[in-house]
Length: 453
Image (cartoon, rainbow, N blue to C red; front, side, top):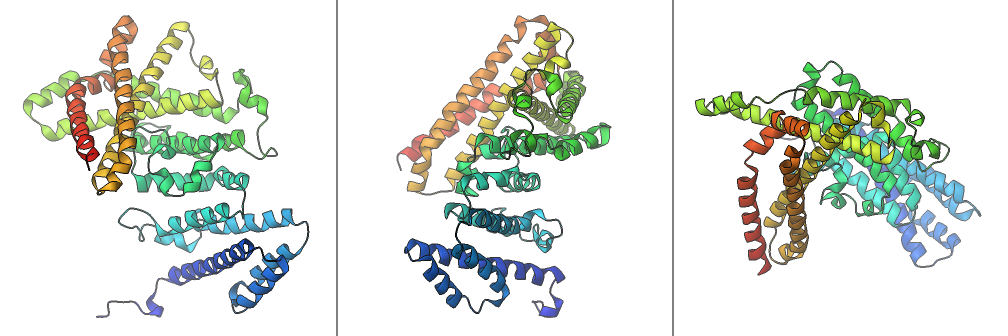
């Protein structure tokens, strides 16, 4: 039996995909040559002459090359130049955004050992090339992150590659984020807001499905579809004034000025939290299972409780994100009394503290294991970062524990904290002190040992 496929047996989309990549590679090759000639400070006419001569046999992109060279030769062509490279940028992004692109068939098939997908690596590499070499400016680079479909796909890819974490509010908070593209360090607050929005939506989707909300909560499908389809996050953060919502909407303290879709999403997330929050502690059931040594059932309950905790925290991260950036007083439309507002704010404070602690634990641990797989000087270079992460972890744990201890200062808060099946179970049954202090001991030993390398 033959262990290879002949050309006629090849997947029908593979040859088409290869052709697309080969054309893009040829175009990038032209741009690299153009940049090298420009660095040599050659006259523009000499540059175009040399490229025409060098690339005369590239018949597949002949028209594209001619268009590029005509732009270089023509005076006052900034608008045409920008339009040309915007079109080329869209061509590159299309490899991961266009649903009918033949490459979409191979994303899972092409997974590598480090979970990267070659198509994505190619796209991010060449976006970086266009930006670092001045073919697109910073504003045009940032505008890429105002393409809803691209950012959604990027968040899913980053989560797939870096690993789904329950604590961080955005994929950009992961220590490995810049490994995708070091140009990401030039993103601004507006671009980060869009990444945060879709990262939180992705996290809530994942945890909700793990909890079975797609089966048990009738509005779940509608909520998640709305969060992905609504455009207010793009409009409120748009760098393009023609497409942005009026600035007064963003800065307004009047909830009536907020976009309807935003208010609707906010209300739905609050309602969903209340649905999860309404469950009471089943400590007795858990302790009974522990005594009977029914390990599988006990582990399932623990996993469910943990997922509930992280989903609740993610929802409050989303609520806090909308309140801070776009809708400062919106919660006042949903609570009726000062007492209800006080209780809501305590829950939010507690959950946000929990999420910061969780993020710090996950990121410190993953970076620690990453360093363990390195050798010699490579470990030493990462130790200062690990020490800083360890210090921040201590701070977040202290903050979380202080909130737990202060819960008994208010009767209603204490009742909520001790009876809620998610929070109280996590605090009591995760054995916070014992498990994390031994964790810190191991981490400290690693740092001490590696510091002497």
